[in-house]
Image 1: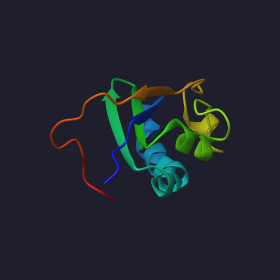
Image 2 (image 1 turned 90 degrees about the vertical axis):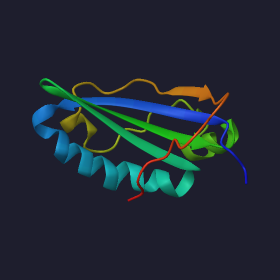
Image 3 (image 1 turned 90 degrees about the horizontal axis):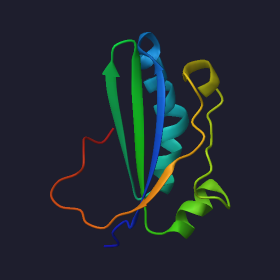
Image 4 (image 1 turned 45 degrees about the vertical axis):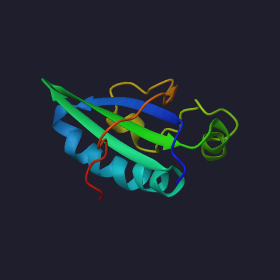
Length: 111
């Protein structure tokens, strides 16, 4: 079994009052297509005060595989159509990190 060697991390913040609505929209419009392409996807959420931060981590077998999904630039942001309506600010970058070690059960529930 091939293991991922790249993690692509996206972060976005929305107002707390719209967090549930954005989470549902983001899953349908953004996460589902990503699940079909990446080796794995994790979605994280932190509610704090009046805002909520979402973090999506997708796992890839190579930079090339990630670039085929994102286009020529693997760090390019692909904003969803309604992101400007929901997000406090539009992210201008993602992090692309090499996975050096992974231990234990790092997964979550599948939808």
